[in-house]
Every structure is written in structure tokens, then in C-alpha cells.
Image 1 (cartoon, rainbow, N blue to C red):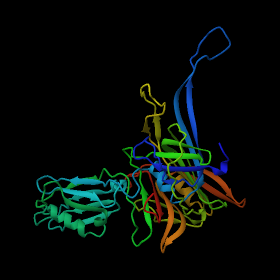
Image 2: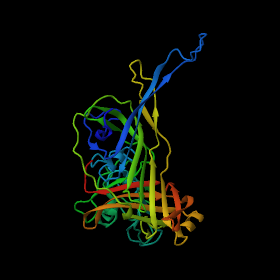
Image 3: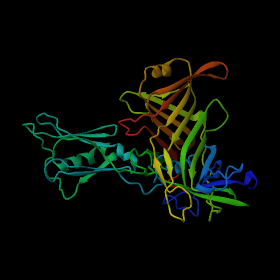
Image 4: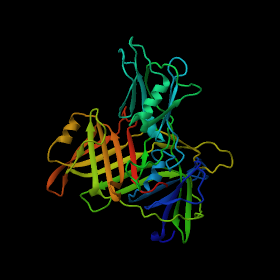
Length: 450
């Protein structure tokens, strides 16, 4: 290979896993390598000599890639398509839906999430019989739950028809921002409904990029892992010296990503990734994308919220004591080598997914024992870490935000500048019934495309 300063690392998301992209779409803005790997089979033989092996043949090939550098909000969304959820590129998201079909005819309603993607799978619908006389129709929103309290007449019988509910949803200031409601199938909404147990919208994958309320230039990318399906995207990665030789590897998927921010140091926020792909070929990209100078993020601009109980995540700020934070997210991807006939390339042909959990490690100054007491009490927590960058427009910053659910797990003492004691606590993510995930990632930037 040539001189290290001339190396570059580029990538793009594949439309079909394992089908390489001739033209990458992004510089990864990090230093890294793509290393070819292979295994050979050497049978044991005895031929009356001291030679241990006489024959060998390649039986498996792949590559291992890695990258490390400063975290920026332009590179991260592409990487998260291969780690958290795929299809998040501003288009192609699938909306979550739910058909509520009470007993009887002409009362079935189709609910569709307003925001496309897997975040819609967190929304639930419930019809409640108030068991009272002359009760009015009412719609209530509790976090991601939409609760419809049905109207009743003088004798306590339900009088709400399908069209009453669709009109009430449309008129509700919160419910109307969460779902749309229309008659399902051939129903016309003219008949009375019945009480229906809570049920969740399903089928949402990927996510649309949304514009936060009041923003003009800001875009919010939401990555919530799909808990019961594999929707990750693979990448084609190019690496090498454009003056000498570049290598191309398809079917690249991240195994693990770590983001670190230390306000006591002098580095910016850093990101490291590692993963595997198909064996690289000696191919240069057909065209090279323009370099995007993504805004970098600063450890000193971190914010942390720790909540417990029934309240929403992100309501209780922790100020004046957060020193550092590190988040590690695995994909749970495994590779499968299958028989592929005499023309086999010896690469893996498929992937699998295993159970996984994210970890967040936070170091605190220790003016009191608030966080220590949460650890000893085994309190289930909802923790939000936001790492901020430059201002986009009034009130909106570039940022990366991690939500993680679960109690503090590991604990250790440390020291800060040699002058006082610190407390280091680790959260291992646990599934949250309300959020319907155990962790999630958001990226806010001024871009609406990868």
C-alpha cells in the first residue's frame, strides 16, 4: 500500500444486501481500514516425514473493517441504517397501522401513524366503556396511548358510532398528530362500536425525517430498533489510496459502535465502529461523492436527564456534575456460510440476528449520593443523553441523543483532576413497555438526505 495520509474511507447503503454499489455516497469522515481475512483447511496426514501438512485449501473468506474519528451528525445517520434500523433516508419508510374491528358491521377503523417508520409501532389504541349513564365521547392521550372513552345513553348502552371516533381523533390536538383514522375496508362508520382492549400499531419500518415544531432548517432523524424483525441495511465500503489501489467490500454491516464524550479532556466527541463484510476486491469507486464537512460535537455541551416512575423521559435534568459518557451499541449481526455450488466465492451468503443490549456508562462528580442511591435501590430508569453541536437556527442545535431504559448496573469509583472522587455507573438496556424498545437514537441536523 501507499502512504497512509492518502488513504480514504467511503461508503453507501446497498439496495440489495451483498450487491455492491459502484458509486459510494458518503465519505465516512474517519480513519480506518478494510482488512481481508480467510481460513484454510489443512487435513492431518501421516507420510513418514516430519512435515505436518501436505495440502491445504481456502474454505472461508470475509473482511473486517474498522473506523474511528470525530463524531459528526452527517455521517452518523448513514451508519445507523446498518446498526439500528434501515430505510431511514428521507423516503421509503413504511407506516405503522392498526385496524380496530369491533363486533358488528360498519364500525371498523383503520389507524395509520402520522410519522412513518418503526416509531409508529409504539402507538396504541383502546376503546373504553365508561360503565356509566349519559357519558360523553372523550379522547385522551397518555404518552403514546390513545384512549377513546365511548359515549353512552340514559341506560348506559354505548352510542358511539365509527364516524364519531374518526371525527374525534381528527379534532384532538394530540391524537391527530399521532394517527389518521378512516373507515376500514368497505365499512361506512355508521354503526355502534364496542369496547376494545388496548392494541398497538404494527408494521412500521424505517423512519421519515421530520421537521420539529417551529423549525425551518432543522431535521430530526429517529432511529428506533425494530424488536421483532431484521430491517438493517448493508453497506459497500471503499478503502485505500486513490493514487495506487483501492479496495471494495460489499455486504458490510456494523457489529458495534461506541461514542465517547469526556468533558474533562481536550478531545471532541469520538466515534468508533467495527464490523465485517465480504472479501474485498481491487476496485476503485466509479465516482466519488463531495466531502460534507459535518458539524462536530463537543463533550462540554452534553446534557443528561434521568427519570423514573410514570413520567416521560427527558424531564429531570442532571446539571453541574456530568463528567463523561460513553454509549456502546451492538447490532447482534451474525454471518452464515452456506453451500453455494462450485462457483462459490467462499463469502458468507446470509446474516442472522441475535439478542443484544446497549450500554451507557456515565461518570458523575460526587457532591452527594443521588445517583448512588438510585443504584442501590435498583430503580428502573429512563435516561436520555444529548450531545450538542453548533446552532442550526434559533432554538435548534445539531445533536445526537440516546434514550436508554433500565437500572444502573455496574458501579465504580474514580477521581477528577486528582482533587475529588467521582462515581461511574453503567446502564445495561432493558425493554420498556411504554417505549416498546430498550434504547433508541435520534440525530438532529440541517440535512434531509444521506
